[in-house]
Image (cartoon, rainbow, N blue to C red; front, side, top):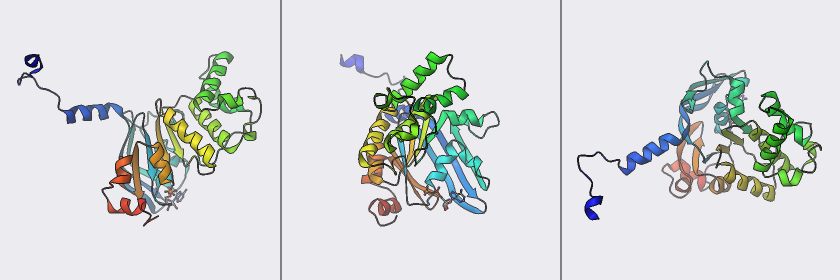
Amino acid sequence: MLAQQQIDPSTPTMGQNQQMSIHLENNLKVKVSDVAVYYGDKQALFGIDLDIYKNQVTALIGPSGCGKSTFLRCINRMNDTIESCRVTGSIEIDGVNISDRSVDVVELRSRIGIVFQKANPFPKSIYDNVSYGPRIHGLAKDRQHLDHIVESSLERAGLWKEVSDRLDEPGTGLSGGQQQRLCIARTIAVGPDVILMDEPCSALDPIATAKIEELMDELRQNFTIIIVTHSMQQAARVSQKTAFFHLGKLVECGETEQIFTNPQDSRTQDYITGRIG
Ligand code: ADP
């Protein structure tokens, strides 16, 4: 038995560190390298390097104005829509630079969905809110297929049971928390693989917040989630990785538990203990 387990010294074996690094490489979804962002002459982000992994929630935390939302908007090139804004450096998603000429920005934004602070359903029915994206992207082959996309998106957003009997009613008639889940369903409907969330719970009560947080844990099985949150408790509850930003710089990023219990940088320590913010 023992003899069988003995390792032939001439056979190269993979060390744990090597295995770990291959595993991480395979799960790398977004690679951010040396990203800087300017609004006119004012620099908002400085030399950001960050790796974001599949099937994880990565939380971006830091004091107001430190560049969290600016950073999030780089990932689906939403900063392109701000005239004064200039982005340098590189962001690769699945190994493809999103600024590459071959990248169609409309297609990119359907793959990298975004959910905003304030729920913003279209002034349309619940059904039309969810079916809008698949319709304009031509994702459904017929009405039955579209019905299926609407149902499964609402199901995954944890809203189907609450709205299945009133799909023709306006989305704006739902409660705040339901509207936010409707916006998540709308994002899911076009089949993204990354979901960006910009303080998605800041306008919600604690019960609606808890529902969204629970949902995030389910969604990460199928998606890569990046969330900006001003709540450290929320970051600690929902994320596996946390990145701390301060004055436009990424101070540190690591396992959420490590960031909150054993931060490496004194600025992170000061923030999580309430000394800066
Ligand atoms: P956070 O999300 O951490 O609160 P932001 O990304 O919103 O930070 O802002 C970072 C910096 O960039 C701030 O100084 C802010 O004033 C500036 N900024 C953000 N959006 C714009 C914009 N559209 N035009 C000019 N400056 C902006």
